[in-house]
Length: 130
Image (cartoon, rainbow, N blue to C red; front, side):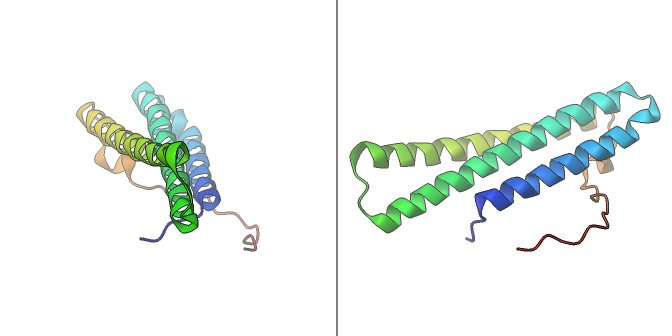
């Protein structure tokens, strides 16, 4: 399994969240209060999943470093293993919360296509150099 750099993951999810908020602010003029409420809650759920994924990546990175060094013992090893387990649990709960939210939204009349990925707004700026 290939693990992404935590900074790149945070940037990617930050951009996705910004695009979601931009699209939601542009489409907010429809006058439908239900969609506005669901947009805000959906953005919160997406942010929670992104935060949990970033924590999982950081915990896995610390675990890989610990395995590479081979000198972690006692409390520091236990702390790394506990953080990794807590991060996995947080990610699982965040993803379950997102799925439950989508189910609730569909039951409340939000169209099924509303949760599909929306394209990010185009910018004419040149791509960032790596």
